[in-house]
Image (cartoon, rainbow, N blue to C red; front, top):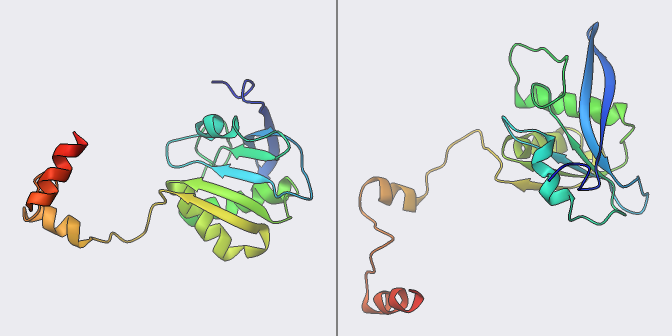
Length: 174
């Protein structure tokens, strides 16, 4: 499904990155509406703005939607940092919003690494945010649940019923 078929138009936003020409690539659907926040979609690692096309195509056209390629992804070019970090992406996202004059509170949606970026952005720049939606955001710390510990130690098998009632339920679901 192409951006055009989803009602999106592609754009390049030119800027300067410490003397080096740079550009953000983004798509847009609908127009700004002061009654509704713009919805910005932030992809994850090794992804790009096209990831969101199947979602955005189903959003009514009276909502203003933007999908943006993060630096080092898709068609956004010229931000040649040796190493990207969540903090770097947060600052580049703020730069994008400022260049777009998107300073009114936004609805920002992020998936995977994009979820972590959105979360950190909301903490650092709450004045830009009306709401966030995090889809499978990455975390800085791994946490192991009791279930994971039991599975790792071979103490739990979710496929085997432990009681006659669990056996009946399993059979009834087949």
